[in-house]
Image (cartoon, rainbow over all chains, first blue to last red; front, side, top):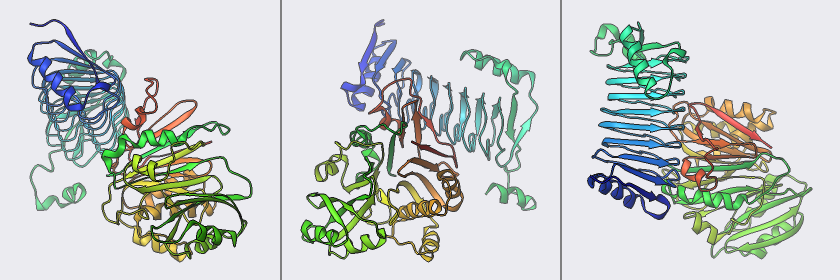
Length: 234
Length: 299
């Protein structure tokens, strides 16, 4: 197995060349690829299907790590919209702020954003874990189907709107709940999950006033007798 | 899908290469549309004079025709042109609507902007195309806004390119990404108050709407906050005035917009890739504007 770290200066290559180099390094068993000067370029490290550690020294643009499976990505900077979209497994850690739609439709793995993220973070999650060290924007957790979202800061309006399953934990203020999103009792198991997930990212879970949000399940099946629920949701 | 950018020096006395900053920020935003590109640049105002930017259609009138129309209204200086882009300074103390009409009576002309300090440069194509047609990257000034356009409804031509001047209000312009769905009603209300429009573009209505609010005595902050409720549809926009830049995002946060600032400067863009072309420091931490959020920076 190769032991060298591969290094790529993004400023010298096209996005296609960079992504091909990452995949080639992963296929060759190189444990780590280090990339400099990403300069917020879009679509970096997408569809990486082999276990490799990818470190960006600088900000990345939209869709970083999207459609990947088993990759470990570290971004020493911000990221743009839809970081880790449809991630299957692995991890993405962003040491900066994120954009909108962070971890959209992820099916597994962990996405950690140290700072704030924008609107619709964790939209349509189908598994996995999204951890936001700061606050999330409008309609985050919209149509969540499975998985866990942990927000250490505040949640914008409409958090958890129309979620089917899964759980959202908010440590700060909740501006407003979305349609059919309700607060549930925080259990000992929940606290254990929070401590485990946050400690792994260098955050003390004890310093927050945690609220747990789940689906009210009123929208699971249509009933003409509950017209008001549907009118509010639609 | 359009690309927006803005830049401002916070120090009221400071001027710098804002034309170059716009060119550098607009270049990577070309992926958000290259139907047209434009900038509104704010230079050093000269007391008692306005600077005009006028577009002359090919095979239309000559610069001499435009100059003649201006000389009938005031004292003209610094007159010159690059291709179809005419620029002049005029000593004038009359109504700017009348001055605009006087110039546009010359066949084939359109007044892009009139201001004490603002100059609008725009054309079809990307940032480099516009730089070739009407060089702006050498412009020194206090602040600027820029736009790359992917046309969705109105025509792909120079007239429908951004920025839009809030005619006839001097020094106010807008760049917008999105679609204002109630702009017919908004435009009708403004027209009933006597305001006029150069195009049927929804974005132009934002510029006139904000200028009208300011004329009524509202602060830029109040005008921005009102717009979030009065404008229907999707939008992220930048409005520039002689004193600064304001930004607003619709209540659904459907169009991207982020900003970063330090003690000296403010940078605004649709995507961080534009910011990083002019400021690579990791100390600069861009943040997305929230749903329905407004911000403003005055020099």
